[in-house]
Image 1 (cartoon, rainbow, N blue to C red):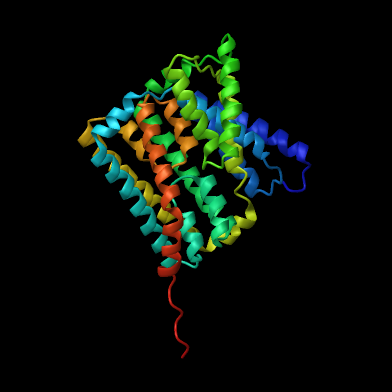
Image 2: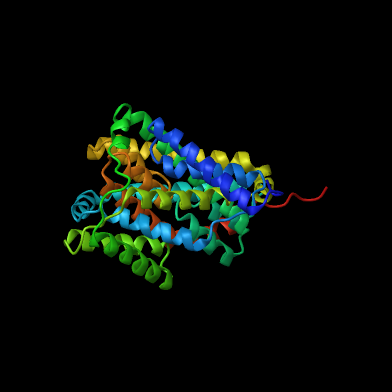
Length: 355
């Protein structure tokens, strides 16, 4: 693939992504428009593809996803979180503890450097973790590989569980899509919100601000009837594709070969964290009486944008899912540096004495 021209690679990426997405849509697979491009991106990248998505498209797509989330947020979720704050805090701290333990064990029983294992095992905020890890001396290539491998595992498993749980109802979700609705001034206002709030979130260096600021501002405008957020399916499909390609094309062969030696330990740590989050989801269903899909997506270990896309097409309580995911993201960003320093100092094995 590396010997092919960039034009050939782009055409291949576009056609294969479209075909796989249509196949997934035919079988009513949630987040097909995200997972199709993501899978094709991984395959092409590991085959030596040299093309990459311009970061501007990725940032713009995150802003659009932020507006999409804002459509589904309501102030009532704050009442629910406040009323159940003990279990909410338990889930947050349990996830942080599990990720810290996973990072400690990963560094202790593999050849990964301490800071790299610590940042790579963080359960969320993949882009932010990659950016922050370089400042603390971690191998940013391995951190990126670990983070986006987790995103790939989480996205795939979450979409599969949603598909199995919805059963025949998944067909109704797909059939409700209207690709080219009539647009009015609300669409222009939505685009302005995404551009201005997304730019401001990046300018202020807010972690994941290109998505979080449009989400928060859009939720206020939407709830206050300032305007109705209007996002046609064709625009969302483009945003999903750019995010999927951005994640998938990061899995280059050089980093994969570098991580191959510790790949079993990395995969085990990801599966263990996902299993723990699934157990916490069962706990939420028992204590709060909510449906399992909502609880599973709320406790799923990232990423925020991919979980939002899957949740949007599954009929779950979007407000609760996004509130829990956002709280987890902020808690990880606040505790990440301290946790990474602790693991770097305490986890590495002591060298064996020479005979």
